[in-house]
Every structure is written in structure tokens, then in C-alpha cells.
Length: 58
Image (tube, rainbow, N blue to C red; front, side, top):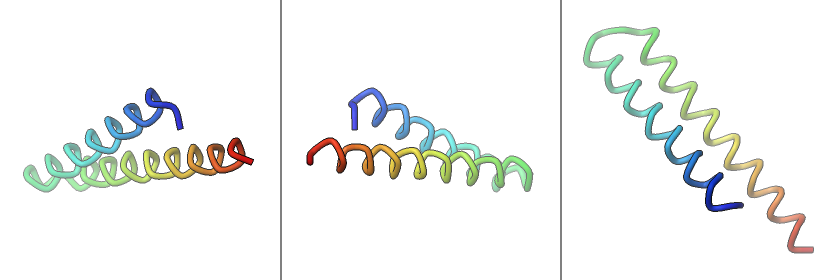
């Protein structure tokens, strides 16, 4: 996984956590769900990068 991709995924995950927290604080279910979705997308991207890295090593 490239360092740029890792940083991007981490930033997206942190942004999702912030959205989720803001949604909880303001009782905005849509914003909270959007934050969880952003975190899930970041996790999926990170998993995809790890799979690519595994095949590059062989």
C-alpha cells in the first residue's frame, strides 16, 4: 500500500468518525449514518490495498 493511499484512507476514516460524532451530538441520524458509511468505505479501500500488496510480493 502506498503511503499516499494509506494517508487518504486514514483521513477519510477520521472524517467519517467526525461526521458520526457530529450527527450524534446534533441528533442528526442522516449525518451519523453518512459518517459510518465514510468509515466503511475507507476500511474497504484499505482492505483492497492490502490485497494488492499481497499479490505484489509474490
